Amino acid sequence: ETGVTQTPRHLVMGMTNKKSLKCEQHLGHNAMYWYKQSAKKPLELMFVYSLEERVENNSVPSRFSPECPNSSHLFLHLHTLQPEDSALYLCASSQELGREQYFGPGTRLTVT
Amino acid sequence: AQSVSQHNHHVILSEAASLELGCNYSYGGTVNLFWYVQYPGQHLQLLLKYFSGDPLVKGIKGFEAEFIKSKFSFNLRKPSVQWSDTAEYFCALRPSGGYQKVTFGTGTKLQVIP
Image (cartoon, rainbow over all chains, first blue to last red; front, top):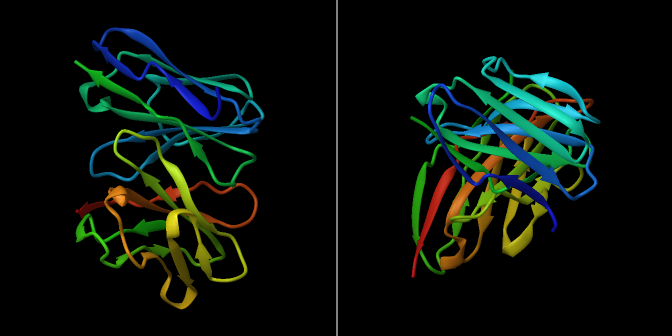
């Protein structure tokens, strides 16, 4: 498998659930990113990791918790989300920080 | 802080028409610029990028973009669109030097009618 993969592709969760999104990149890149894509809004950068260290946390609520166990994997742990958190969550990677990013297909999250 | 504006939210063209999608940015220093495309049901992918050198950048599938520093613009062009170009197009900016985050525009949906 090549590129950037994300699982699950679709997720429906209640506000009291705990779930995790997974991202894996098969490109040998050093940097990984989480974005939120909502309708009619620009992509919102959430978190950035470089060589497994968090570089940026863009004022994201604590109900979103990232984890980067190694340079190929990135998780987004979700806890007590709100309906307005429903969106497409995109993972991306780049060879190094600032270089062009390669995106995964996203996880369509619906919070009920 | 930097920002990216894409004023055309939805563009409808007939096949073979010429395309120009606007992208303007706000940032006082040196920038790297990108266009990404998202085809229906597919993930975002890089169309072209500008880092330095020739301000006219050629990308995949016949697309090109011109960086005009004096106008803070990086418009995307294609001389003759095809139905398969139907997609959403995103302009993005990254200030040059060190680690700087990428800022995306709101996107332009292009619909090409056969």
